[in-house]
Length: 389
Image (cartoon, rainbow, N blue to C red):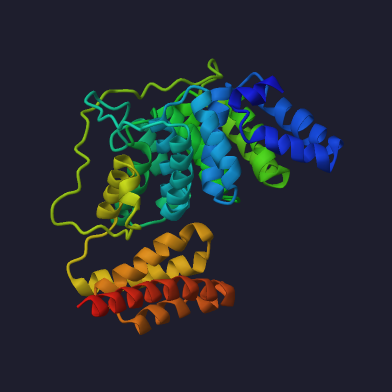
């Protein structure tokens, strides 16, 4: 139990007392014999267990209290606030920006409660690796089945935008970021080709077979045995392949750490971001704003207002299909953006209705609820302006 208090006592003591009241056996089975023994296993450092846990919980998007607890646990086990934020931001590439934003809100709330101010440092030294020229880039390009099936020009754009953004953040090392990526791929369920890819990538950047196995064992407590068991077969295949390629070295170390010049990450002039982000998000953190702005500017470039408006309406339909609480603010931002670009309210309604055959009536109802709040806010603002004029 002492190891749990190393992660953090606040929040855990309340949960422990509640479980005790419900049934002492439940507490012993779940906490003492389950969770505590799991994270006390020696082959993966507690610090990296917390990295994995925060990445998984951020990607799941449905365990706010647990994410807040383990976000604090990352700080308590030696990570900086910048590294914590970067871990949550990293989920944006693989799980979507709405989930990343929701996670950032939780993290920043915890940091405020602890009186921690985040100071974002610009890296002047060369970054650990670059996706474009590294052997890891070649691995990602050559072994990802879905990418290989795309036309060359699309494959190049996808690799640069998705994996480039994913691996090029300044706060986390490439090795730590790759471990977080594996955890996120596991959390997204049934993404076996991605799991295979990132298991091998983890080995390439220096994670050992024992450490990667511990990640699988730990995640049984978060995503469940039924999802982890199929991954064990994939892991064995990857480990066997590595053993054949490197028979004298079971713990492969990366030889791909050549330094490169740090790139200018400012948004190029003349590019319109493809992401409509809630207005308050840019105020959360300079790192958040820069990361999301860069992703948006590299994914699309609109030559006209009409193209930008059509893109916003398509995004509204997509976000309606997801119908997650974590997406509500971003969906509202897209509705506002579409209206500001000249879309009518009927255009917004039609975009939401396009989700009906794909996601069902509950998703459409969710979209209408979000849009109605936006319409109501606009109406209230207009009435106030009329009264003051």
